[in-house]
Image (cartoon, rainbow, N blue to C red; front, side):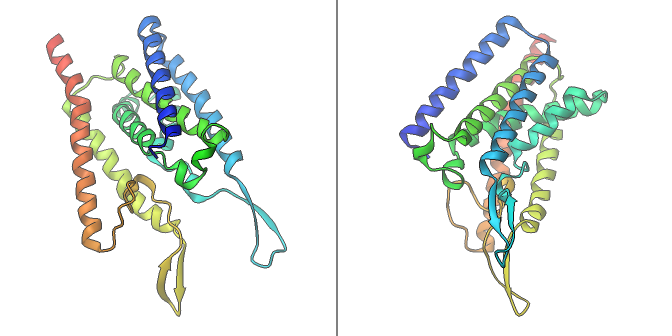
Length: 256
């Protein structure tokens, strides 16, 4: 993080995002066509991720070798969950649910992807910084998250959603529900070590939605520290959601 390779990638992403948004404002393609392009990038992204991260791991006795995808690459992060949402809003006939999800996707795509680009965990979990321009996972990571930012802004500009404070509330409800579910998922996919029925330590946890540990690497050693971290996380999400929705609601009121 914050290496020269990281800054070069941020510049590339910025140029790509600005170019795509400029072309959208100029040509105004149908929203479904935008979703089609996004789905192509999503499928290519997951294809690259799976075949770049899958490992051959031996069984305990070494007699069998299994292909294995590390659990932190499962599509259960805030950004990767967007793939299912893009797929749903593209093909669903349920306009109410579509509207509900789009109002959530706008801030979560923009804010989640910006946070991912600013703090690319890929350099600490998957590849080294020296592989920033030689490993396919680097291209998958930065292009995919750039696409989410573009999609988020297009959702805001497309007129597909009528922006109200009710949508802001619904967005917070969805993110809160997903974050709470992530507590169960993180524990289910963790790898604990027991001795005589007593929990000794945790060897691995996926940390989906960053609800177990913060992305800045600050160590949390006490339960109250984790509680405080969750409170800070909630406040940050609340404020950022207001920043995202306020301009759109203000524009709507001016038009009225």
